[in-house]
Amino acid sequence: MFSFFKKKKEEKEELPKEEPLESSSLNDDSYANPVEIKEQEIQIEQNSVEEEKKGFFSRALEKTFATIKTVVPLKQEKISFDDIEELLIEADMEYEIIEKAMNGLPSEITRKQLRHRLVMLFEHAPDVDLSNLPKPFVRLIIGVNGAGKTTTIAKLANKSKKDGKSVILGAGDTFRAAAIEQLSTWANKLDVPIIKTKQGHDASAVAYDTISAAIARNIDNVIIDTAGRLQTQTNLNNELKKIVKVCSKAMENAPHQKLMILDGTQGNSAIAQAKAFHEMVGIDGIIVTKLDGTAKGGALFSISNQLELPIFYVGIGEKQDDLIEFSPESFVDSLLDEIYTPEEK
Ligand SMILES: Nc1nc2c(ncn2[C@@H]2O[C@H](COP(=O)(O)OP(=O)(O)OP(=O)(O)O)[C@@H](O)[C@H]2O)c(=O)[nH]1
Image (cartoon, rainbow, N blue to C red; front, side):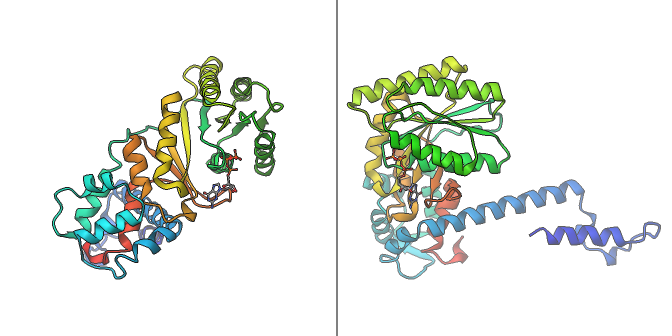
């Protein structure tokens, strides 16, 4: 991908130093300021990251795309208002959000017009600055059983390691023995430390010990699991609140992120679930799992828009690498690529 730049640099190095350069032997790029070249390289790198993400979304959203293609089977330059409306309904976007997105659009809609409106649906979610993270950076993982919490924790731990960061896990779902075992299995597989206790023991003590261990061992990232279900909703509420409070005792301002894991196959019904947890402890962001197994990809619009929360990642499979950073632009572009001809970009 950078061969162009490498070649230019090599060519320049081969030129005899003493002889004045003839303008005809060089194109404009040869005079480019190294800073500009660097900026271009960075731009190309960013574009290729966006392209790669778009590729991931295209694969993850296969089922969603198959559904919308029943409405718009052939790519077009302009698509009718009614068809767009129908395909968004088919992709499980809430009708209220569709109305909001399409308000005032003409009867024939271009790619540019639709792109602008769809990307805007994500814009009210606050920007999160992840450039200057505290150490350890503590994330609390919240969500109902079966949503994909354990798998997502493993994926996040794997990502930390790949980014060159050390990580420790806290098996905070002490309600179920299986949850502790499952997370331990992942910790073994990924070769990362885990703090755990026996089933039924205090989950907030696990959270405290995990953060303390991270501080003592100079570990970069802490990821703490929590129960998705207890005997009653009140118990769950109390437990989560206690864990949050105890985290802040172990380290000021911890947990730094409370992340809600939502099962993407549930589409819009996941929103009510997230609202309930948001009311309990306040959620900072969302990870939507199982996007690979659903035709309800359009629910991502509603989830982010309704909850006014950012989607940080999406899960696109059961393996440790099946997690991608969410970007509204690449998500919307991969969707539009399916229905619009490329010229109208
Ligand atoms: N296809 C697919 N499956 C996933 C994804 N994430 C998780 N799963 C699967 O969903 C199931 C539930 O995931 P878990 O990680 O065990 O979910 P949990 O929220 O920890 O649930 P409990 O174990 O019941 O507490 C498992 O079979 C996972 O392999 C994903 O992104 N795509």
